[in-house]
Image (cartoon, rainbow, N blue to C red; front, side):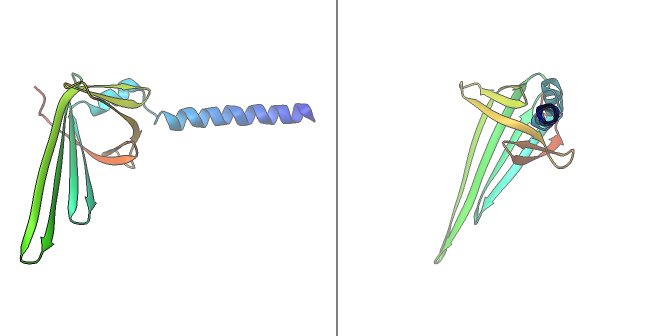
Length: 140
């Protein structure tokens, strides 16, 4: 009886490790992720009522990046409308380690995002948030 359980337990553990490796890595090596990001722009938009945030990240093949977030909103009220626009940006270098995107800004800030493939070739998820992927030629 113990031999029977031991064989099935070993097979179950092996299968579980296979799934963990296959799903956890997103199917891409770090070098493949870096190549997939180089020369691409990622963009996502979040809406909440009358407010929205648009985030764009440009990646260069040499390991540099630029990030911009534009927040807009309006609040209708009485006889007037209150509108606002705010823009933040940063530049720096990026790397990929263990399917984690690491952004190091010129100001010394470090941000980390887990990378995973989206539902098609034009989508990449950062920490589960889906970004549209397009080509760009902003790098020099």
